Image (cartoon, rainbow, N blue to C red; front, side, top):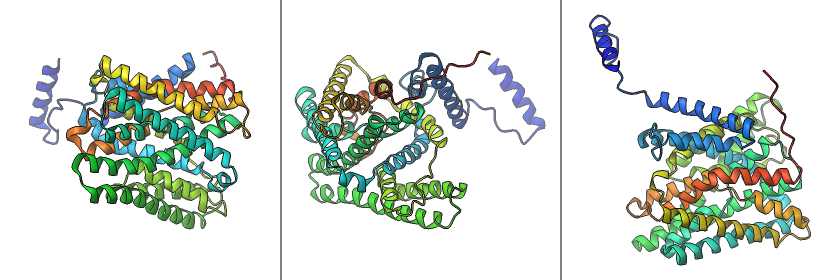
Length: 419
């Protein structure tokens, strides 16, 4: 049939000179668009029929279509889509950063202690596991720990919104996720230096690169946050123009970060935190991307699902990744439960310890940043955190959802009307 279509098309070209050559395959943009629609359908179907998080469906659609499974999307197409996913993650992390109220945290030291305890315990536990049980070098063990120590802020934020969750457990989970995300970015920058020193003995870059990453992210975030507040302050309160200003300046920050080789996820998180800190007149305090969140989520999690290295999964790596997940989960749970006794009852601390478990997109993009530094050696060391992230893409959203439901802070799911 394809041969007949080609012959008919070529016959038409003799008369219609404007016709392009017969397409041998679908345009990558068409394939990617079909995948996004498929991800939406799978996510909604799983949510409405099985009560699973929509995020699980988005990731599943991407994973099935990616090079590790059916191969409908090849690595070149994924590479073209990655900047879009990078942008989606950055915008979601900006929203996470806006939940990081530094003034409130300075008056609530117990929350800072909990965040520091669970992050430090998770890093040390993962580092020791990767070094002793897996046999990675100290530098790559630290990289594995830096990538996987933090919770997935986009997953937690979207899960809370999906279930319309409000309450102490929800707020504590969001705040701890934001703080641990900030701490992981600092550790990630330090690890960049360790890898330079271990792999190349380059002490100049070992010192300069972390400073460039952190300093660049903070500077771009501050500048774009200040610009957003200045322009938005001249627009009508509650107007769409303020939403436009917020998105436009965020895109500017993304572009500047890409130009200066600064991680987008770090820059946009810093911009969100700066908006929260500097917005004393509450100019953008009630301006957000409510429906835009889910457009970004479909894009982000479908692409990250396709990026997962499922084709490289073997029994050894799978068992090691499972061990990493269990050690990480226990460390984060103990870190939360053992602190904050005066701020939250034990039963609620346990639920928070479960709610902060997700690990996904941020880890995958951190791994991608490291892979660009030393591509000749990073594929195998980074396979462990990537496989762990792949497993938690499916489990993490459900754990977070379950914790919020057990806390009684979610709205009951309404049954679909009969058709």
